[in-house]
Image (cartoon, rainbow, N blue to C red; front, side, top):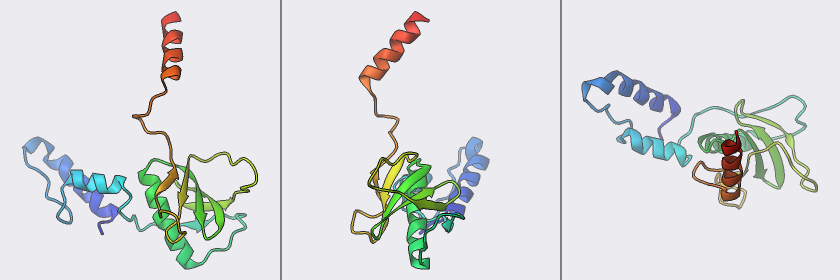
Length: 155
């Protein structure tokens, strides 16, 4: 498995050879476009740990924290920043940017302040794949676009 440092090295080589007409050497036998595709699919590990925020009032084992690190990698690759993680019967909130579990979510009410819901590996759901994710750039809302266009025309 290629890690984030290998990806950064590949990017660095690409920038030094961009004007020379040469292709940077592959990392782990894969081209940069293949690496980028795998990173988007969440198939790389950054090796960064997940910690518990002070006041999170959650107890997790080291095995659970390792599983959460995979979730954080996947969420980051998908562009999510605040996620709800479904793991072992718990609904945990995570700040992906600082890789911290910030607490639990009350699933009997409305959960706000998240931009993705992900099932952790081993939770019985399609592991580490977004259940609900942030909107994709290719998604469009025709009525919203029409409303914005009418505002622009008036201005």
